[in-house]
Length: 112
Length: 114
Image (cartoon, rainbow over all chains, first blue to last red):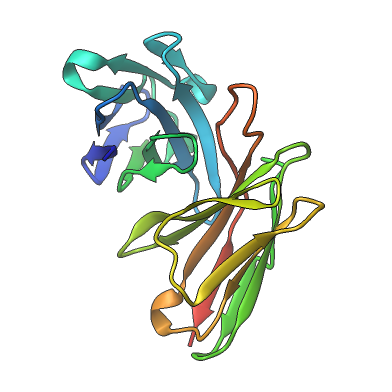
């Protein structure tokens, strides 16, 4: 069965610092992977998706993620954190386009 | 704004009661998904409908049911409510066709069972 594991339930960075949120997947077939962001009291917003077209995927708000098959990873990065990036981030995989399987989420805090 | 709408935004009800949550997908999307988000279970897939037909089922309790209507809006019915059903319920939609399967989420309905 496919699954994703997010390492670190909380990540804190200073404004302007690199953001790195980790996600490892478990899949016996090429996965389709996603990163979503959830701001307080809001729904989930799609940041980016990997569907095997390119290993480096650029998303909204300056985020990107790199698919590394050898490491079964799909980590989310942003070169310079902004206060407005503070939110919860979810990695997700879909086994067959009928449901999303989410990780447990990583709460990002950004300090001035 | 994802284009997915959900009503109501908040719902407070008592144990044993029944509630209906409503979702309108993005214009043109045929697939509707329901998810439950709680502190202890995280984000869990409940059920998917595609163009009026049930397509996939997840960890949905027998007390819960859903349907998708001809105009493609969907309703999630929760009955015999228990305290543990308190959660955020999200609806998402996708086109379900043409290789574009990413899901767009509504703002959610926060259910509180007292």
